[in-house]
Length: 76
Image 1 (tube, rainbow, N blue to C red):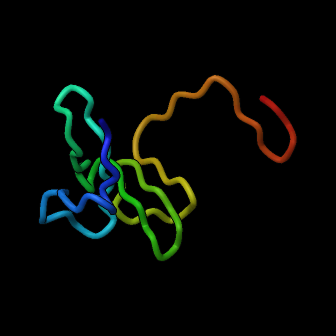
Image 2 (cartoon, one colour):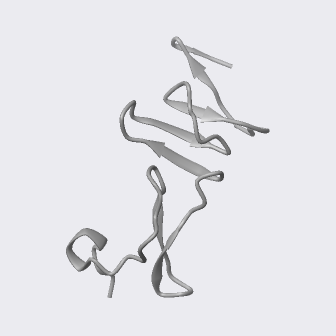
């Protein structure tokens, strides 16, 4: 049974501002991602991957692999 963290309130204390939590089905518990791995900027509504100070809606520091890019209506 999954339990919503807001209702349940059993998340571990010590989570940092912008830290994302996710359900680990192997451990059967909520776990926190490291803020240097994935970060949510709630003020500016931005996600940083390997970046705790995202400067755009999605800011990835490192290599990005994609199969399709749609930019301005043009697919490459």
